[in-house]
Amino acid sequence: MDTQLSAALRAAPELRWEVLFVLLPDSLVLDWAGPAEALRVANQTMSELGSAEPFRLRYVGPVGEASSSVGVTLAGVEPLPKVFERPTWIVLLGQPGKRIDVHNSATQACLRWLEKLRLQRGVLELLTVCTGAVIAAHAGLLHGRRATTHHQHLDELQSAAPGCHVVGNRVFVEDGPIFSSAGVTTGVDLVLQRISEVCGAAAAAEVAHTLVLPMRRGPQDPQLSPFLAHRNHLHPAVHRVQDAISHTPTHGWDLAAMASIAHTSPRHLNRLFAEHACVAPLTYLRQIRLTLAQHALRSGSTVTQAAEMAGFSSDTQLRRAWHQFGLRGTPSGAGE
Image 1 (cartoon, rainbow, N blue to C red):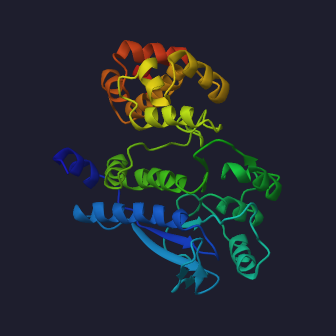
Image 2: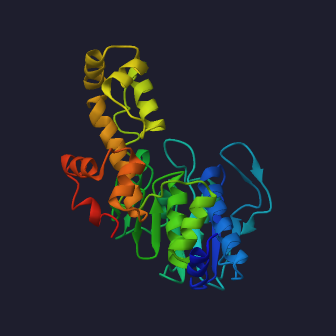
């Protein structure tokens, strides 16, 4: 850890938060394990600098043992607390299935507990991961709020909370004391954002680096990234090319190199992409590179650095792609 980073971390405000992961039967393991690991690393990072650990992790629920989505039973689950002695995050987790069963006894007990909460920014806050937002909706906590959930459960969320402004295609949404994330891995994105707010941006960057998370997504980023776009087809040759581009976007790709991956001619590859992916191969490549450049710019890279990191031959080529795809502003202002 370099001296400049250490100084920035030491300057971070010290505010200790209780983090309560609410475990219900069949809770998705990654929904709590990913965010919990990020918070653990944040504690480790701050402790190594001589600061107090900012987060105390606890696992609570209506039953002492909770089954998980992968079949492992979790023991030692604490009872749902009646009082909160320090600033607290309540973290509601998702569950598998096309719809969330809120009629079982454990979930009903949790809903009665949630209904009594008096959320307040900086005092008692709610974080939902995946379909945890649906549980919050059934508890009446999302009325008049903006929130999101997994893209397959947006209609269910709206049905459970007609007074909620359901936001689709977002990684996470913030509204007062309520923070909702889209699903599974986006819980880590949300927690990294909260770590940044509590410990500072330098600490969040160090956590992301430790967890080998090269790209952090923000509240304005779509759930379906360009790495997943144009993939709703079954053609194996087109998928092979898209996989190759996604794995090594900085490679010196041209149409001939892509066609060799697909074992076809460049002209036929263009036809296959148009028919199955609804985009030209080179356009697909530029979209992927542009996404990488945007993340680099948001992380503080210069336009020239971002262009090189994303595989553009020059910053001029990056600027051309920026305008070609109708992005707002300029690359120079993207990191502001």
